[in-house]
Length: 287
Image 1: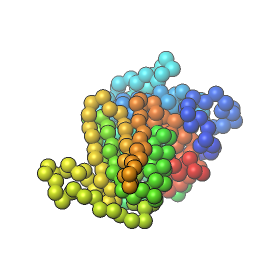
Image 2: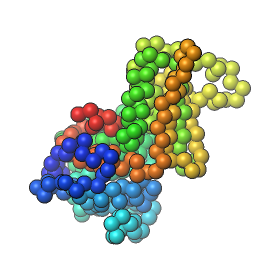
Image 3: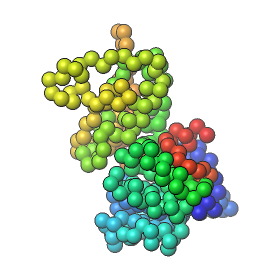
């Protein structure tokens, strides 16, 4: 399953269409789980547009037989059986944008077959992700990112840096009303990074005197997190810092799902040269 070559993660961070991929580079065959969904259909188009990879299979049990446009004048047809799709197409990578209730089973099948996995479905505990990665054949990689937008990764990095000097902070994350988890994986990771960066944990006044339960948000790593779910949203997060006589706001907005695709393509190119559990797009951007 690890026959393809390694790729430079800096290539096409801003655009997943590649015109300068050498002919000597092996094509990356990608299986897309949840191919008929909002994110899955974008992945179909992004993979088709990338000249160093192709859609080997599209799997979506709820939409078996449905055709998904590939953005290049063609289409792919969804099948229902992940195991059969893997055995038939022998993919290099599985990209999963499905649902927290099914991602674990998908990963068990793909990793068990030695297929590298790129996962954007949040909600599965890191401990379980680690168990799945440990149970895979040697050399297989499970890559998971709560957010594939490069700007979101930078937002989290800047927030961690700011927390060193401004430890009073709260997070407001806003997503579409069909999102399956709250808080978002991005908010959870941001809170974790903030907790690891700041040396003190200031009090978060108001939680003990809430008139309406939840008004002060959820406490995640001692950071208040507020989740908004509304139609019309895609993915947005604001990290608010307060200090003496000043405030600082660090915000990222994904206004279209195409914003996640350069990160997905980067991950598909990189997992072939990695193994075990890797979490966060920043891991690929730093190396």
